[in-house]
Amino acid sequence: MADDLLVIIPTRGRPQAVMSLVRAWHETGATADLLFAVDNDDPELDAYKREAAKLKSSQFRFVYGKRLRLCGTLNQQAVKAAKKYRFLAFMGDDHRPRPAAMPWDARIRECLSGGPGIVYGNDLLQGEAMATAVAMTSDIVATLGVMVPSCLVHLCADLVWVDWGRGVGRITYLDDMVIEHLHPANGKAVLDAGYEEVNSDAMVSADTAAYYDYRDNGGLDTDLAKLRKLVAYDAGGIPQPGSTLAVNTSSKPERVRGGAS
Image (cartoon, rainbow, N blue to C red; front, side, top):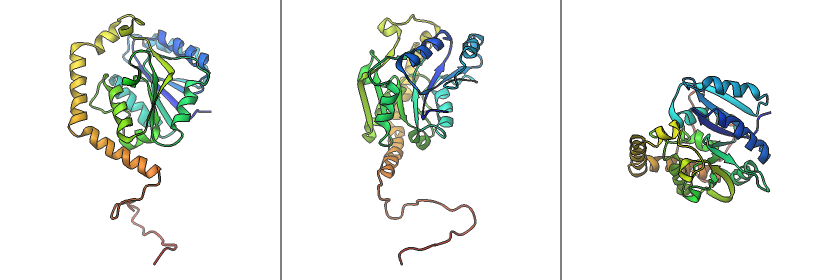
């Protein structure tokens, strides 16, 4: 039976991360479902499939598709999953949740149980400044049609998630929920071809420019307006006079069963 939380991990060139992440799931007692999204042109595709064959539990799944880069792949899978899961999360293939008195996925459910919102933990690298691993209610994805702005390729998604959460006052940072980021910047990973590609001058420049354009030129404001409506509706907000609540496109008139005169 599927869990109510799905963690999506777009991954490329690192099949060795699969079993390391599965071990982290077991060590932390997590029940969240885990989806590895693999490019079908990945040079390590066969190795990923060998790792997938070792996993018999439906808790751990793989999907193979056209390379859309990290943000594109995340959006593709998140939009599909939002129809089924109450909560959605992102981790990189270089994140590892760590054991705690209360499992990290239980903390996520607890924090998000009150309605639309975002939660993230301590990655032991960026801390509260960036949500390098994140979870949110799936209605946010359904409302925006994306889990991260489509203008981004790989970088700056962690900044946007903080912008969204703070912008609607629905974000929680859990310093004691450790989802460790094993990255060359903190000496916990080797600078491989994947890191070199996504941290190249060209990529940093392009995604940074795209982020500032989104933040400063209307994109963020547009998305926050949608999210504020979502939060207000969830909280029982009263619609403004003249607002359209629904549109009948069936060509058949609704039956009026009663109401105030």
